[in-house]
Length: 320
Image 1 (cartoon, one colour):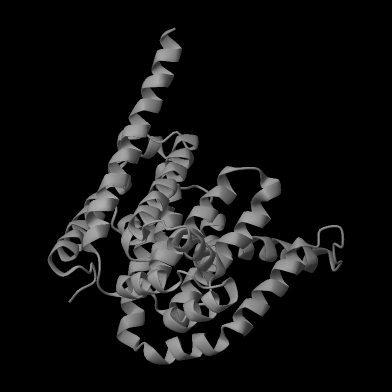
Image 2 (cartoon, rainbow, N blue to C red):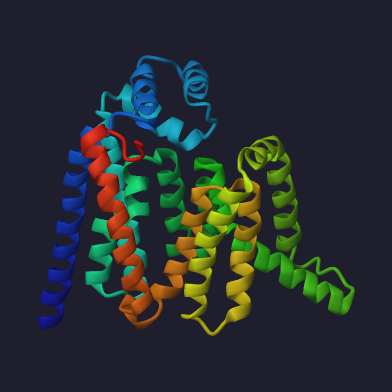
């Protein structure tokens, strides 16, 4: 009886947290009308009454984005008459639900889970600004929570939700390819029974080939100072994660593709992925109750307060 009561209490608390996130999403989402959201809102309304082909051409033209998952969701929900704010608030609840599932699997203290969901800057960016990237992270979480047999399928959905999600998987992909190369150099034999590393290497080359024009444009757009600042931020996440692991080789190989990506993209989203990697190590140590986790929580709480203030004041969390 006591065990059942505890389970019911834990479930009740988690439902309350998800409801709170939904109402926060409704409130702040109703204010976030500028910046990228103005384009998302216009596109959502413009998809109504259009066939799928016409709608997709319209979507790509106005958002300059080919990501099909976000398009499909917005096209279906807009034509069913759902309010965009309601759908995106609901998607925030789904994202939060899968975060709770993962944190529970890692046995993270629920107080840490709650504080993270209600205060983390990067999470609120996914909630209100990075709309397409949010769905990439939803499928990413599903891919690592559920059956390994389904991992490739949901990983694929994650990447086509937002192409930059390939960077989230890049660390593990690099590990697999590196271990394969080390084994090949040691034996000088190709392991045909395990074609996955060769397939991943082919996909990686294809990915960068498809994005080579975009990579070149971004590389030319960033100056040395911006790259150095981005590298320092990523370096901080790397150093913190090193302090909370004994498997230094895996840690270094996971972060290495992000270091290369900083020089190619110089993008804040690369740092977000670095933070996700760092978060895994922090949450796995003492149920997430540790100095590193607390320090980053306080830092991102401060960043998030500024982000929310800008939403309320300007309707855009990234307003100058």
